[in-house]
Length: 328
Image (cartoon, rainbow, N blue to C red):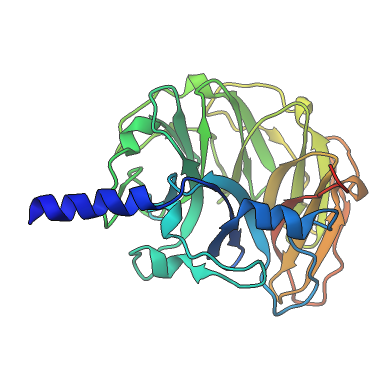
């Protein structure tokens, strides 16, 4: 019987065509896949992934291409990782919503997926770098996550009250920026984070004070600008080259002034000139803005109004969307 079961599993994978799929994940946690050709055909010369401005519709938070035979690693706020083969994701039309990630993974009640990484091959040259709300960073070889288990496994051991907020796949030699809700940021060499085992705690990435917490981690690229967005609808782009390298664990530099006007920082993302940004408010209001409409100014400044909010509303997220060009 064991031999039959194993053969059945092997045959299932063998019967599935190895093809590239476009995978979309929405802001409210839905996922789907569709053939890449369909996606390109429908979007040729279009406005991009989503062009909606209504309260009731969901926003595509991320879109990427992965083979049907690839894995997607889902990391949760509780520091666990779950695996799904791309061919096990629901295939749906562009208009369909897909399936809630919470229904695909065996998550606890208060557990949510906060990061995901597509992986075709597990190799010893790649690393996963993680960041937590309390300023911890951890680097682990990708190979440490190559044995899927049904209920998921520990990806990082968290202190009480801490949460995993982001994970990036790297070659081990990138530069990392951590940004906080009080407007500070630190840029450091990833190689200053020594690789540790899968269930290790990690090391100090940034020193926090005054009830501050990390709200984002990005891989630094001097060709891009860093968009900082605050809860009261203000923001700016600053050249990433303006963030000087310092030692891991420092308190960093001012990235944006968190004045009474601005409020706290809610989101950061590295943007290129041809990106669009979708801003989402607590009350469900959505606007889409070309990155080029947002001023590029220095670090120690307040920024400009990006989104006009009603009383008692706040910006909760900023999502980057690549714009498609006609025929290119």
